[in-house]
Amino acid sequence: MGNLVNVTEQRGTGAFYRETPLGLGIVLGIEKTDDLNFDGIGSFNLGDNVSVYLSTSCEVKHFNNRSLKVIQ
Image 1 (cartoon, rainbow, N blue to C red):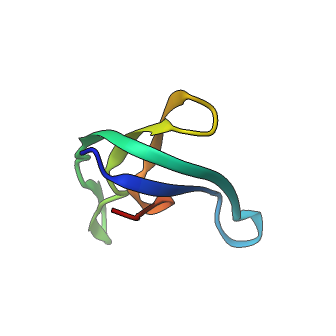
Image 2 (image 1 turned 120 degrees about the vertical axis):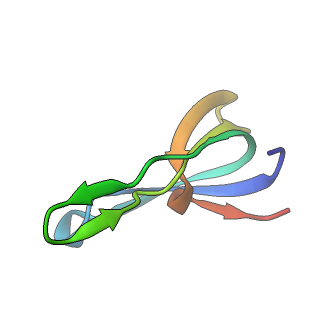
Image 3 (image 1 turned 30 degrees about the vertical axis):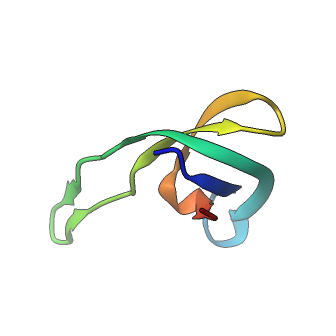
């Protein structure tokens, strides 16, 4: 926690995939997620949920860890 991150919100998949750059933020908290279990496939983890204070909008938002790139 407290890491400086570059946030690029990622949504969708395939033809519907898009990225929205949101700028820099500070990690306030990380919530570990449980694995999902699918019959015939096994367990799959969607990634952790991260609370981030965005410096550009001065608000706290929640993102999947895949939307963040740690700068420091």
